[in-house]
Image (cartoon, rainbow, N blue to C red; front, side, top):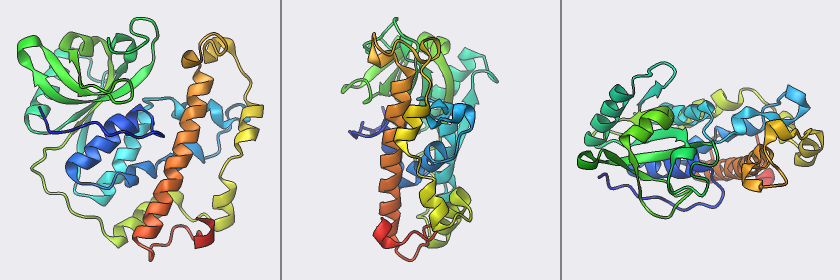
Length: 275
């Protein structure tokens, strides 16, 4: 089993908490790079129904989260392999690839339906896309050892056959023995420029959506959004609202982090008093 532990954090969804934090710690990377992607998720205008909360990118386990990992590739000598069930439906091959990756001292992100996670409160009751990190293999019992601090404070196990049924996509990270090069100030400028382009200060600030307006413009639909009044944990509306709040907080923390770490980096012209 890899020496990776879950890390507590109050304002992170399952992908950030179960994947971004422990993977960054394992490889010695700055996890704030991955949090910068929250800008594209939460501040990019969304035309659908004129409501940011209709943005499916806020759904836990969205495939867009892969792009937050891509920011690490820009900052470090870091890489991964992506496997999508729709493109590679052979479960046995995927299991073998995951086993080989872990045996090569590299963790694996698994996005699956938490309906099949037996440590979940809604086990066999509610279908929700969920992210966790596979860190070990028990070949004798055909199980993976996994970190899921979002749903449990204990290391959990999941059967190979369940993974075949429940997984949607997976990220196979690179081996621990590969060199990781510290990011440079020049790289940081390139990363920020690629994310925010040529936004002026006023455009950047105006992109911070008004949450009250988003809620007012959101037209609740019981069929689409789950049983809002019967069970808050089944409400897509509330899960997106939570994800929006968390992502905004994490993005703000990332901006402050990089501003304090490298003051010479021009963070799209945001003056210090606004941070």
